[in-house]
View 1: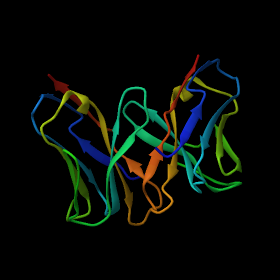
View 2: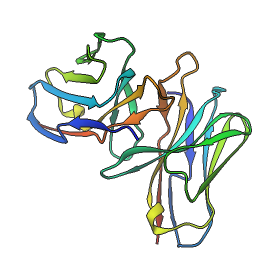
View 3: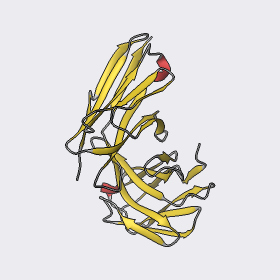
Length: 113
Length: 111
């Protein structure tokens, strides 16, 4: 257990509304990641952070922004949600002592109507 | 980007049977990871592999880092009903900095 929580766990929203998902970790990990999971695509990286205020894009970053103002929180924002952003979103942290091993949060199921 | 081919996509087995699944890439990987995901939950790390040829066990699970560094295998021995779930491979290319994930193998175990 890497001490990762995500909120909300479930959300239903309408097209065009802004949505913010929160990832919180309690173990002071430097690297944090946001993925989305869709049938037929596996897990795809949206954005990641390598420190406070340090973020970079992943392979599916269009329509998403992130912020990290504190080590423990990594926020994912959909500025104007679209139906194509209906998905399950996972936050992950990278193990402090290893360059590749990642541990995942419980996920947020987002439905955009 | 890099694609990982994970097979089989699904498996239906009887309790007590052994299971094998694999993941292949078109390029050389430095790391292979295997995860299990239960419905409604996040992936949980099972085994991490860092060297070509490495064979690592975690209880009834055994994973291997292929000699060519382009594949990895996961075996589950004497399956039980709680082994049901989706198993994902993930890896990092030699030239890359991010993980790539396979699409998963859905395992069903009939009692």
